[in-house]
Length: 353
Image (cartoon, rainbow, N blue to C red; front, side, top):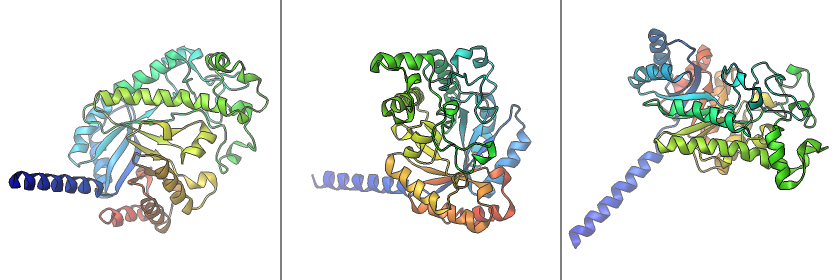
């Protein structure tokens, strides 16, 4: 009995130590990057060597499944994890979707996102209410989940078009958004309107001030949430993780892009804390990080925007303040264009955090 008791105590001790070691794993550096259509082994060896020199241990790569399959063995030699970065609901140049205009999201004016591209030409958003569009999006995710050795299916653009742009972006497009404008207010697909009317006996197209209807907002939020959680369920069935690039913190995301990522069953979220877009200071990065951490029970990786953190002091402060407020790492957009001063910050901090 005494031996059994000692064995149990030792087992508990080792499990406790194991869990403690897991929680003490280092603060991670990651980056978003594009792979292009063609794979070039030498270019990727050079790129991954560069990332490794900065202490970057995870890369979120936009590319096809076949290209990712060729990158992963090279990355493994450097102990760098590769995530499959996927443009989810926004599908510019999607040759399958383009043949089905009825798949696309519709704004309050009745304009289809394939024909009316809010803000920029690459804004071509599918409707999460259309069953065939949903199936197409899920099939795209399925292709990535089959890639051996992929760290996660990394969802991006999994929302609606921005109904409100960041304050610093509005002058760029010569617009003033003091309220929600109909041309930027999406989610009015005929299927969405029909389903909403069946429940509430109201057609949201008739709302004079749709922003005042919490039911209409939640209805649209739910369409994205169920899509994401369906992708997650499929991926998890194959032991594949799902992560997502999201707007700064859930309440802000709900208001600006109809994205309730605190309701998603993610393995990690990467809030894009690009403070300059909102005319905020670096302290705001800490605030947004802390808010995200408090709102969810999965890890937060703070997304940082390198053009807005040009000096070593600014970048170091942004990284430190992210860690102090509970982030498990940072992801930079993008490490490919860092200047020497910015690179020196990564080198300095890679073994300290």
